[in-house]
Image 1 (cartoon, helix red, strand yellow):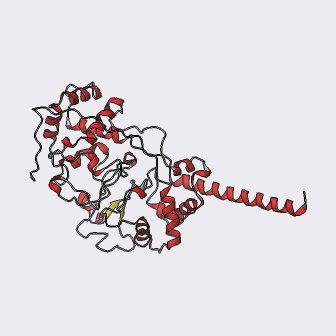
Image 2 (cartoon, one colour):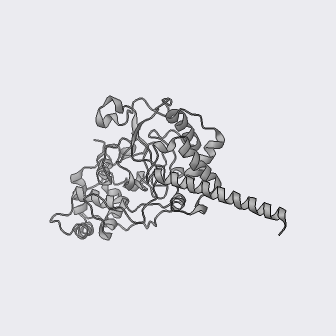
Image 3 (tube, one colour):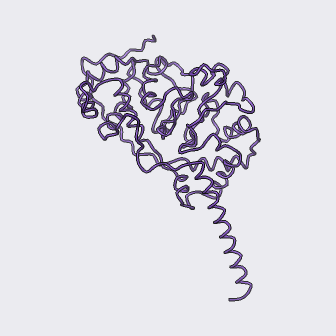
Length: 348
C-alpha cells in the first residue's frame, strides 16, 4: 500500500471515529433528557388493562351515541386517521358550537402527567368524562350515558366481561376507565426511539443536527421526557408575549384551575410526538406552519431568534417523532333499542 493511500485511509478512519464519538456523546446527552417509548402498554392507576376492557373502550371511543345529539364521538375531536386530533383551530361540538381551545392529540397521551392544556384532569379516565359533559362538546350527562348503555344488551354484556367483580358494572366511572384502557394502547414508536436505543441509522444527518439544536437552544428544558412535553406548566410568553392572535387575552390557561395569579397564561407544555401531523398549533390553534411555531417558541420562550436554516433542521428532527400508528379497525357497535334515549340537538 502506498504512503498517500495509507494517509488517506488513516484520515478517513480518524474522521469516522470522531463522528462516532460525537454521535455517542449526543446520544448520552439525549438519554439524560428524553426517554424512548416503552415496549409494553404502561400500567394505569386503579385500572387493570384487559383485552375485554380495551375492546369495550374502543367501541365507546367511536360511538357517537355517547353524545346527546348522537353525532359526536371521542374520535370526532381526536380522529385517529388524522394524528389523533381534528386538525381544526378549535373543535366543533354540540349544535355546531365552537369550543375554546385546540384539541390535543390522543396519541401517546397516556404518558402526559396530566390532561388538557391546563392540566385539569389527572389522567385519561378523568379526561374522558369532561368532553361528554361539556355543553359545547358532547353535551350529555352521566345518567343519560348510563341509560344509553343499559338500553343495549350487547353493551351490558361487554361491561360485565370487562368489570367481572362488580355487581353493577355499567357506570360512568367504568365508562371512563374503559376509554382510558383503549387510549393507553394508542402508542406510536418513532425513529427517534430507535435512535435513543442505539440505532445510528434511524435519524438523518439533518435530524441529528436538529436534535442538537433543539437541546442547545433550550427547547428541551420544557419538551423532555417520554412525550417530549406533557409533563410541566410554563407561561406562554416567558420572555416575550406573542400577539393576541396567538395568545388570546381571554384565555388565562391554568389560572382557571388554580385561581392563582402566577398561573395566568400558564399552559402545560405540549407533547411533541407526531407534531408534524397535528397542525394547527398552540392552545389557540392559530398557527398552521410548524416552522412558524418553532420560531414563535424561540422568541417567546427562549428570547432568541431561530434563523431559517436552524428552524429547518429542528423541524426535520420533529419529523423523527412521528411514529407508527397501531392498526385501527373500525368497531361494529351494538344496535340501539326502543329503550335507547333519543338524540337531541337542544342547547342547555
